[in-house]
Image (cartoon, rainbow, N blue to C red; front, side, top):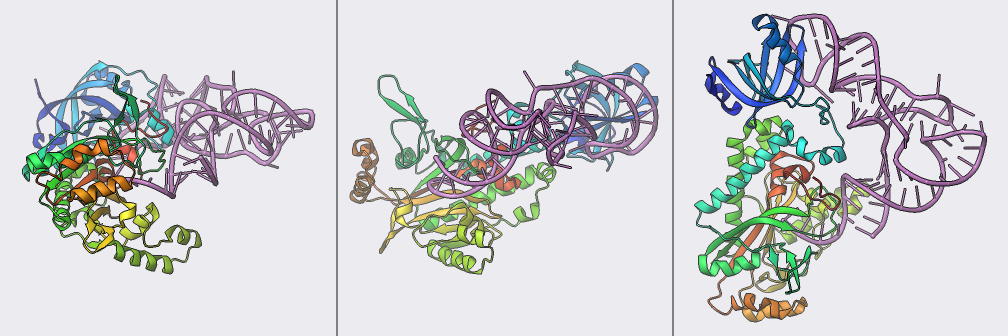
Length: 447
RNA sequence: UCCUCGGUAGCUCAAUGGUAGAGCGGGCGGCUGUUAACCGCUAGGUUGUAGGUUCGAGUCCUACCCGAGGAGCCA
């Protein structure tokens, strides 16, 4: 029997008779000539049947097969530039055709444009389409790259709890659940505080898991459930943190470029932009960013846009500001030294400038905005206690967190990278919802 | 929470207040290189819901439901 192959390795089998197990994605025929586009989970390949070369019964069987039917096809691999597919350029001349299950003929997801509501209601079927398949393959590679780089650079994975007793940062709205007789528990929005404990045992750690935000955000950059990797490093200041972040992000992009080129191409992503991602990334201070935004504001002629771009020192960037700022750069750009008042309570103040924090965000180019938020953490126990009190946080809940500054406190830093925003940027997508298999948004929990 | 837009065939969309239509998808037939092929035939509808105006409402009015985009907040 012909050997079973994966479509992504098809170029290794030119001239050989092979077998593929997969599903019929598309069928078209022109009299005696018939084309099937078959997907097997690893790729998409065109299979060709010519009536005169096959028994009549077999040709009719292929002709009648509905979209999405599961099949086992035997045939000879040949190179042909005309052949569509991912990777494409190869096709299989059918010699054998076996139906595993004949799909019923009302498959709802047609090969055409669909509305947002429709495709999200059919997400369980939508993921079979080439664009969604490619995006989710790239997502898996991004996740693999994240773990690889961290594991190979002295970090150890420490899972932090998802059920937590209180708001970690006391800012965002959390999902709430009853925890037996212990009162309310909340779904984690960050593992950072636990990681700050972990570094005192393991030096460099990361947690990687789902994160939950119950905010009623309704934009193309938001999900209520998303994945975040949070590295945390002992003996690390803000500059060293930026060094780590740029190495990390560069590795992720390079890995995708090497292993998922066919997928990027199928998404029509301009890879030239990604290929130039190399350290160092530009580093600008918040103060400089404010100056740049003022210039952009002054030179903007469109009155409506102009109002959205209005900005004063002390504000946090809105989406229009991030977009305008990053359009000035072709690489991801660091913005450091945000005003203390717009950032979380645990961030180390700038020396001699307490109104500024040792914080840094990494903004992706092409208007994709913040993919990383990070900072150097407060290492002085008295200052940390002051901040907890100023923010009206429950002191008791932070007792353990304050302990960390009492026993061997060191300068330390960390950051969180949002997986979905990173994937959206690498893939060049309009909306974050396509970067996760089953997106959870404020109005959607099906399927 | 606020602002804007939308809801008509399985899907994408048309239809000046006057007989609800096209393309795709489905079914049947034709064609040896299709790339969401093309050509012919065919089936397919409680126009989001409830009320109102009118001789007559997909269209105008009111309320509601559902969804999307954006703002705020954030990764």
